[in-house]
Length: 258
Image (cartoon, rainbow, N blue to C red; front, side):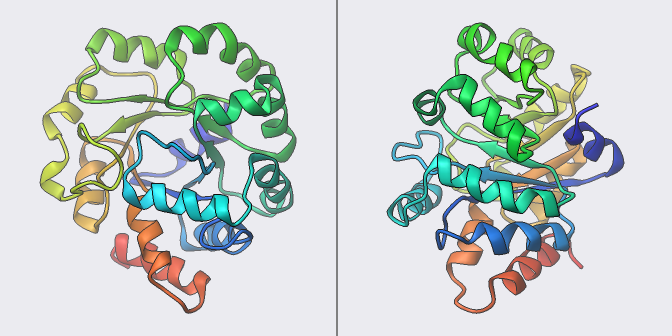
């Protein structure tokens, strides 16, 4: 059993937090990742900054631009994670776009994930046919599970196909939008989450794209194993000029009502 599934089996109301590597400073992962673990987050997603992040809204686009300007690259992310991950217990998931992986070299990407201790990857813009043909062989070779996405417009038959291919969990986009849109509780598509529940998938479901408050987090956890927070967290650390670790703890405590 991979480390992501172990974590999901151990905890209820799983909380995964996304952070863009290289934001707000090029070396910020050294502070943020240990602070997220200390705060009790169950999974951490590290975003590879990309110049054209089509699925992301203004906030993550901005953090990607800042990170790239700070000099962040995929090679540097691996170098940083090689130093950070051995001191962590929380699984670290790498999330980015196909272009970055292809440019780095497909097998080279999975090989580096294995070498530095990455627990899984999310690459949302790989077509399923392409994934099966050119990516999953290396994913299996280096034991790096793929987390795959579904949306409210994904037909049930395709959801089951994705469930067969995915390992770790299914990333359910909460509504038809980009990240960081109108993330109110009412925008979470509850009917769609209920439909996912009815399919009895082999993988647990975590809900992302729309979780910016304790209410939204609790609502997502009512219909899924947990939730993923990205934009709200990045906004939180961008608006704070004090101790970054304290800010991370404060954000998570507020989200979990502690």
